[in-house]
Image 1 (tube, rainbow, N blue to C red):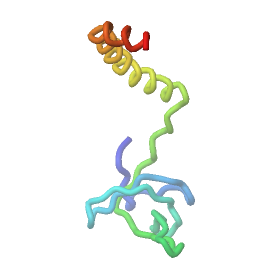
Image 2: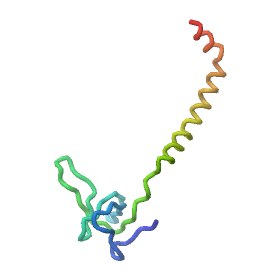
Image 3: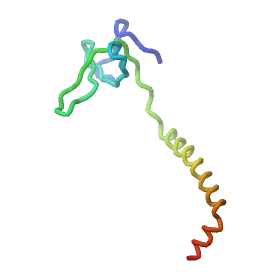
Image 4: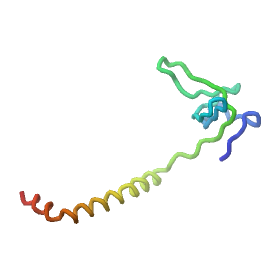
Length: 100
């Protein structure tokens, strides 16, 4: 995905996109409101924060449930390996504690 200059094209109304504010050198997720304005947040008093942007791009697809399962599986593997090493290293102590 590439950045799209607002001079070239604007997103569809009410679409959530990643916006780039060149003057502040920041990226925000915002919703296009029309007239070159994006809603990017609410302040504590419920007032909508809006801004203009120099560029925008579509957001990537959300992760699928399969991706979430794979992430958990990959995170679990190093934990299980570390647990196995600890169990082997302290097998005698674990065995004695089991008898208490």
